[in-house]
Amino acid sequence: MQFLLVALNAKYIHSNPALYSLKRFAGKNAVHVQIAEYTINHRMEEILEDIFCRKPDVIAFSCYIWNWEIIQKIIVELHKLLPKLPIWLGGPEVSFDAGEILDRYPQLSGIMTGEGEAVFSELLSHYLYQDGQPGEIAGLVLRDGPTGERKPLDMSKIPFLYENTEDFRNRILYYESQRGCPFRCSYCLSSIDKTVRFRDINVVKRELQYFLDNKVKQVKFVDRTFNCNREHAMEIWRYILEHDNSVTNFHFEIAGDMLGDEETALLARMRPGLVQLEIGVQTTNKRTLQEIRRKTDFTKLKAAVETVKKAGNIHQHLDLIAGLPYEDYESFGKSFDEVFSLGPNQLQLGFLKVLKGSYMHEMAEEYGLVYTQEPPYEVLFTRWLSYEEVRRLKRIEEMVEIYYNSNQFTHTLTFLQGAFHSPFAMFEALARYYKKEGFFTQAPARIYRYQALLQFAKEHDGENLSIYRELLVFDLYLREKVKSRPDFAPDLEESKKDITDFYKYEEEAGRYLPAYRKYDSRQLSRMTHMEPFSYPVWDMQGKTAAEEGTYILFDYENRNPLTHEAGITILRQSDWQREGDRK
Image (cartoon, one colour):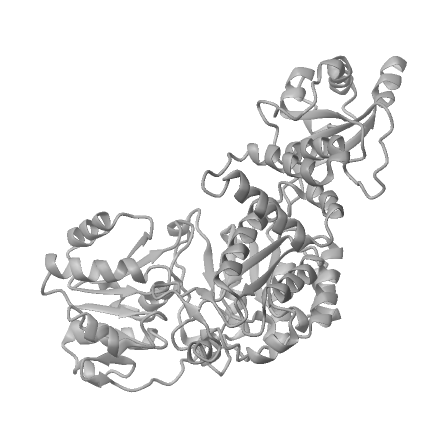
């Protein structure tokens, strides 16, 4: 007998930890369980054929907002191909209106709700040994109604998900050290589980060591608020600091205002790239925070984020949500500017999703909250935010993704902000420019985005056009040694001799590129890049001109572990000419 568990992930690099947890919890019966993972980009016909060829005896789908639409189609067509196959569903997308879904799809046998491990284990036993009736298994919804709730599981009794990391090569591994959330945010399903349960810390450490021993590239904790228990968080952070393998990155979703001095001091000792933090700010509007039941002290959050940033070793990802109650367009712009001023490595602009089972779903009519009928149930407009304003924010979101979160235009954007009264105003103007040029319908190629930003800067700060040219060249070569120079980059003809002389000098001296000692001057010039600059593009605070004969050497083997920018050395022409003459 084969019970097939099916996941349709958003991307190939993702995996579905829920299904692996179900299988591992099944114990000796796990040999009868297979997992099939696809992505939502697979054609439905391909998924159907693969399932058909596997010939399962029972099948269950893991349902989320990103895959529910295609799963509904698969259910109907799969039943035509395998009419006797029992089809089960589970997951947050089907847990809160299970009865309605069963009425809509007669092809279904039932739906698993809540924590699935014990539910699935008993259901599997039923099919294997004809053990009892499904109606006797708590945690199911059948055609004659729900079978009753289950007690929460002991987190420490759930088996470790991963037996062989090779099965997850080039994919993110997910880990869970706690379940539930102490907060009651009205838009979040985690608020439904009002108790927070923790996995035994010694079990956690043993499992983390498995990741470290296997040099897993990234482990993403799925704990909703990782640092809600200070001692639990500190124990884990101390462990990964003391056992760092110089490879693995750990991702945590935290409450920024709960970071104290001891936590930030510990984080400051981490290897750059060992830890990354995701902090959900959502809004700085106090009335909105109160309405969504979110207790955030922005003053404390700001201090913590700035302290972590000052240490320069941890990637910080901050989130905002558009469409929340009592937040209009102007208020959202203010929230944006306040969060942007913290200088996060990434700023995510999300849009409210009205999830079934959430308090926000109950309050939708009162808030005048209109959202899409199909997943992801995203806001269209509210009492405070019109549809036109939501669409405007969508375009601003795309500009933030392209020009800020890509980390490809860091120095140009920093200087460009001076031409606008706020960062939000800058991205707003950039979105208008993109719309005017038709770039939202015909997206410009990656390299042309530099040219588009230069043209935008020309329209808004034309007197500094020569500075923008150099800033864009600097930002471009910080990321990569491009094969062909863009049109806005200056001709290097006049600097060729100086650059050639430098690499000849460096071949002999090995002063600035000691890691390249085995290469000759031509190889050095191909592996690195050297560029003359008239402005101090690496620090444009004073807008002063650079010293004549200033060059920057870009070293692509020596990158910043957080930003992935090339290492740079600022040189004067005299540095190598004078020393070269002495030789």
